[in-house]
Amino acid sequence: MTSKSKIVATIAIGGAAVLLAAWGDAGHRMTGEAAALSMPGSTPAFFRNASRQLGYLNPEPDRWKDRSERNLDNALYGGTDAEHFVDSDLVPPAVFAAAMKAPTRYAYADTLRKAGVDPVKFGFLPFAILERAQMLRVDFRNWRAAPDSIKPFIEARIIDDAGILGHFVADGSNPLHTSDQFNGWTRENPNGYATDKQTHARFESGYVGAKIKLADVMAKMDTNARVLPDFRSAILTYINESHAQMVPFYELDKLSRFDTNTVNPMNKTFTTDRLAAGAKMLRDVWFTAWVSSGEPSGRGRSGR
Image 1 (cartoon, rainbow, N blue to C red):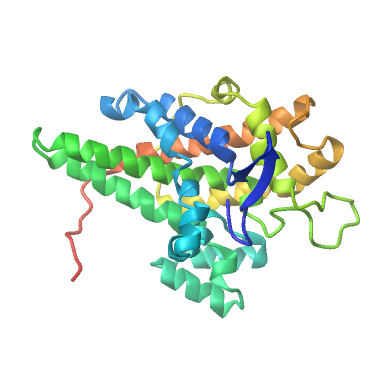
Image 2 (tube, helix red, strand yellow):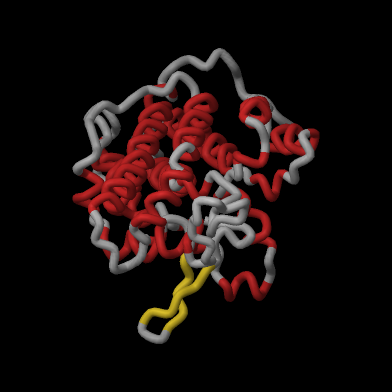
């Protein structure tokens, strides 16, 4: 996940320090692969046949957090870290909704600043999804128009862009990526929620890696791929729905602590529901990019 460092946490496994981030490698791979395996048959075959590659690529933006690279120069990590989360509870819902109407991520940041919130602390996850969804739609549009001799080059671009997009969609399905309570409860705590700074890693990496399999996520999938009315409103709804599960996460963690030894079926149901929600949203974003790439946009290219 990411900043503050949301979360660049480490745990010791077999004496080695292991970097934990986002849904962890396992959760991200499962999200990407489940989404790809549930794509409609009307999607190009090259895309449907790339399920394992799309699964592999889903954790890619977490690999950019490579500590050796950060020690050489922090530009990559510092410039992309805030794309992995959105602390939506830092502003009223109306402010978040207004920010999501901003034409660019820079205007989004300005809206948040006017509300007294540092946009880097708030997070850019919604625009990380939105911008990359648009990139993918352009890729598909270019593929439709290309001669057969060029199509394979664009197909490589499509798979790569779709895989990277998938990471950020998957981040959004984790309630801890949508709140400032991302790694232990820090507010007034009359309910006695977990405050340990391993909360994030216990859940999305430790528990998911130990207890959840691709088949568990696939069992929650359906074949009802949606063409979203527009990316922005769908992203806002998706993030709000995920954020609504933040307190239930802490309630469940209090009842049955998430870790590598957890066996309570309620923990598994909660987790597979969230992973499947991410996989469904990712499938729908991919499918929308494909379908809408074939529709007339009414606009030509512009720019410098």
